[in-house]
Length: 474
Image 1 (cartoon, rainbow, N blue to C red):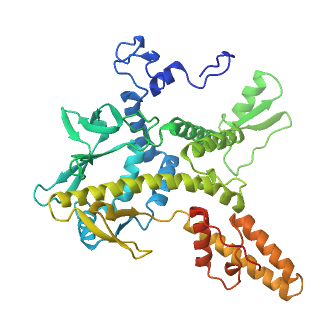
Image 2: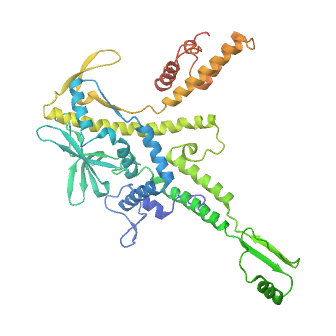
Image 3: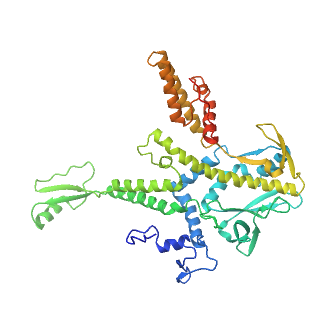
């Protein structure tokens, strides 16, 4: 935006960009894409991304994943951590519900266990996902059919509430009722699952592709590297600048004597007098400038994607400690995407369970048992289902545990050799533990023979749930 106080400053967004992103809402910044009229305000205008911008974003996102290695690296990193090589797991604490949930999950037509990576990548590229839910009228068996979100014309709302999608309107005047809780039955019902996780505003009805903010920068990064490659190839062309003392007659005589202006063959010897000077000429590549520019653009891309640059392609001078420090924000960002996806998949399975309840294959209320306390209680059948994914920070916790054990072993050896007193080693151990883990020291887990898994679990519990081990003397 242009500064109100200093209008001469460089603008962050031009009026055309404001219009293309829909940021102005009903502010009259628009340019009609049909006849070019300016300042128009569409009926029912909102601060949503216009359909032509949304479709371009989808198109360029798909093209980037298929042709730009950096775009592929970003999405593959997210899908690898969010769904992992081990995939997602069904967690059901009632045997009757488990049978229905597993039938839906492992149905060869659904094959949800083997399609998680593809489904998550599709959602990130398109920014939306629409699955038509196919329910057997008598059996209540559920299957689904993906619908290209480019075919979605609009989304109607219940009572105008943007949080309550009513119908997904498709091309060809077809409409599908979005899955929601039926107020009368308390069960999930509808014709399609409609997911829009990456919305800008609470009032938005459509989602935007995950790569939208960095698409232009991915293209710029590709351009910089392509230009560098072209100039590197240009440098291979060598031109000889030959200076002959005298006038044109001497130059013509020299060329006639050589038999032309052909470049000397590799390994040959060129003999001439001191009146002739040969000087090679090559084109500079500008590699240093391009390398600096590429690093700057890559930093912006990594930041916009929520990943550390060291995770993508350029470790630069980052050491292991720096990389670990940068991993925490990345872990939280990836964990947020995983949480969103697990919620979607949980709703997908719970819909299948509710349809089984509606067809009377399952009772409305079932008995569930808390695995920690062993207490049994009754809950709605669908609530017995949850989906879990791979632990994103498991490797970090294990690594932290191993480092602490190595430290403990080293201090023990220093005490044995008399380099450190036992009291001094105890102070060093407590200080290292609290600085490295960010949690109070626990003497029980600070022993050299402690189990690394126990230490990793303690660190995870303390950082995740806020539990703090009691302070004890070493």
